[in-house]
Image (cartoon, rainbow over all chains, first blue to last red; front, side, top):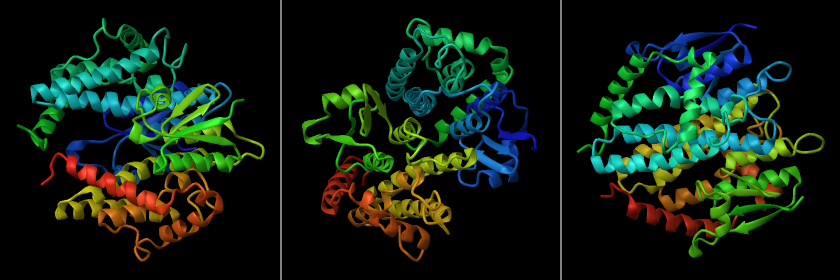
Amino acid sequence: MGKLKIIVSTTSLFCTRIEWALKLKGLEYELTVEDWDKGKSELLLKSNPVHKKVPVLLDDGVAVAESKVILEYIDEKWKGGDLYPLLPQDPYERAQARFWAQFADDKCVFGTWGAACHADALEKEKAVESTLESFGYLEKQIKGKKFFAGDKIGYLDLVVGWIPHWLGVIEETGGIKILDAESFPSLHEWAQNFIKIPLIKECVPPRDMLVNYSTTLLSYLRSSAPNKP
Amino acid sequence: MGKLKIIVSTTSLFCTRIEWALKLKGLEYELTVEDWDKGKSELLLKSNPVHKKVPVLLDDGVAVAESKVILEYIDEKWKGGDLYPLLPQDPYERAQARFWAQFADDKCVFGTWGAACHADALEKEKAVESTLESFGYLEKQIKGKKFFAGDKIGYLDLVVGWIPHWLGVIEETGGIKILDAESFPSLHEWAQNFIKIPLIKECVPPRDMLVNYSTTLLSYLRSSAPNKP
């Protein structure tokens, strides 16, 4: 078998979850890092011609795109024995993990970026309120547990694993506050613990790189917004 | 075990795929039909408090929401033996089915409704072109095969199974043309064959009901569009 490769960009929160999954499985991999200054690579365009987005997992001649699809692929291809399971075994628990993963990506990732992006104060406030409501659901899910999956890191922990290192950066650069310890004590505690785990921490990009990226992205998004004031 | 129930609305294309899955598995179920004129039912609000949307599968005390999550739940809970498999066994084929299912929902379902919804001719043309491109990907996926999964109906066939009975209705009521036999010969042939299968056909609502629903929905969406002319 050829070595696993992941096509990534350094700052993409959707890429980090794939690295974590491969590390939990004990699989070796190489990173092929996209350099956006040079445009999208031939390899990326060939491997994910539909969406042309990172991450893409290259596994012995096949390419798998879309981060949650990749996580399931990894869990299904490398399963059993000593291999770390990402999703729970019970069908209902699996359904719950998938439901909340989709919810977290749709409402929390894009909700947070949306709120950070707004220049208009009233629109921003509305977007923050809506995003706080979404984070409230995550708070209920983690309450009383060490990880979303229970006692061990699982699929949903990886999907929401951007919160500890990315959320503070978006809050700072976007002029919003989402995750305060009083409103979301369990989620806050989970975030503090999750990022301390060596396997998790070692895949996280330096904070100043995220701050630079977020500042540039928000500036671009605000200047190209269709309804900018 | 209590009898399976699905909370549905008669015209929702996301609900029909669940009925098909249960029938393929040979499972009995009851429908609990929402009546939108009376507002959302207590049962729906209790069973899917996050999205408050149909379909929801009620299985012996637990509720599963989001149609693609429900399909996977059904396939994982009732598997093995004589039970009909919805997803393929191979991890890469499973990943491909999930990738295209998400693509088809994001780009083809919402692309078609979006194109039908536009009142402005230029915007409508652009939206149709983009949707045609998305359908082009489905055409490539089905080319040379009887079903998306190969020789038997599978998960992806169920997810794109709205095309034979719903697409013509949206085209007619929305003043667009997407699926002509010359541009998409394989997809067109698949659609013609799929809807003839008795198990598939028996879950499909009468055409005039879909026409009424689509006419009302498009009229509502056009009148509430933020950028209407």
